[in-house]
Image 1 (tube, rainbow over the protein chains, first blue to last red):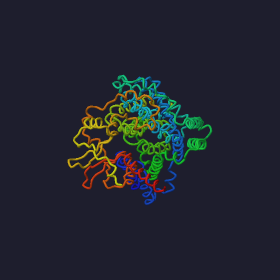
Image 2: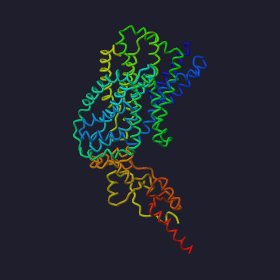
Image 3: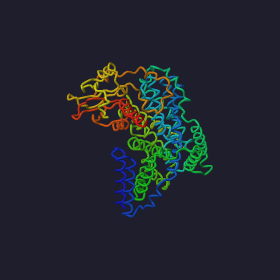
Image 4: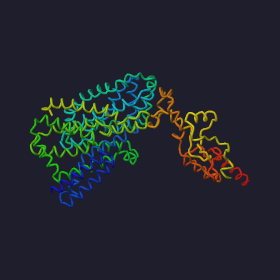
Length: 428
Length: 156
């Protein structure tokens, strides 16, 4: 059994290293890692195909798939462009106001839709607005990524780690609104003021042509208002049902997939095209990670970690939670926060099975995974996206720039979150 | 009919040693849309089009936003000019790979090449690889259409 534990841990750590060093695509790494662990499990008799299948959390996959279909339908309607142009007009071309308004739009969208889509769709319009104003787009792009990472922590559907945590812990949509949202609101405001300070030099520049922004007509940016309206109605209905998930005893994945079904019937799009927009590589990455972590559990690795952690848990529980926030944040800054979350879920469950009060630990995991992603240019997919997009412009965002602007944001947000968490510990 | 029968023989070409600014002034004075870049033996090594130069001024958002119709005023971008540093770069830094055809190439093949490579002009080279002419889409297209007249007369 020791051999099984050592070998599966090695496969898992090697996979994390491959993902971190970007030597191999993360989905390919996860598929290969899952195949290796199942082979090993069969060879040494600790993990079978049916165990692997049972390790996959289909509630998470269903929720993500449903939301991806809704977004795939909303994407080509121009709705995101519409919101960004509205924000630009409302800013009257004043940089600080534009930063706040674009930040609000990105945050609200990423609370209900996935961050990646939000940033993918808002960033190009941001570049447009900055260029016609005659200002550098970098502060706006970096802020959008950081604020969407931060805002996503507020809701159950805002961020993949939250979806995973909710599915494992049984937290409802409302639990996130009562526990995570208040803390995120404070952290978000701190982030905004911090960004205003970090980009004070860029914000002091007077735009060369503020009037051009006022000539943008939001109505013209909507390519397909009819579909946009329909998707938004169904999305609104889905969010309403999310609020009632525990009262009605419906799973969030059922709500999301049901909403996808309703909107597909209502809009009747070219389904092949819509399904092409679903990020299958992300879903497969998740499924493969579940299988890998299932193997880690079956090989006894996670039980060993739980035993070690329990010895360490003699410290005050609030301190243990704060330590978890920082460890998860540090890990999430350098590796994808999804594998970290998937690996830590069974560990926390193990601590719970041994009688520890784990409800505060779930929140610590959510905060660490969410805010940690702000730290480096590769910390979250949203960061990678704005950076890659900016590489094709005259003002590329470099890892060095991210370290100067993003890292302080990560440190301050984690510090603020830790203080609030420690003060309000009995409430978590 | 071969491509050599319809091409223009006085091609304006430039050496690889020119800067972008120098090439730009040749575009302006000679009113051309395309400048083949040739080596000392007059052999083409690359091509510079008006589009490659205008790319230096085009705002970044144009490549990200599929439909820019709603942007009625390009604002600050309208007065953006390439920097002196950009203009001092050699033409080889922005030149594109060149597609040429031999002078004995048939018209339909030439036209198909143009369509598939999305070109408006096709530089023509001799057997020894020297640049000898250039044919535009109009040159080749009208040369092909001129056959149709002979078809009609035969019918009558």
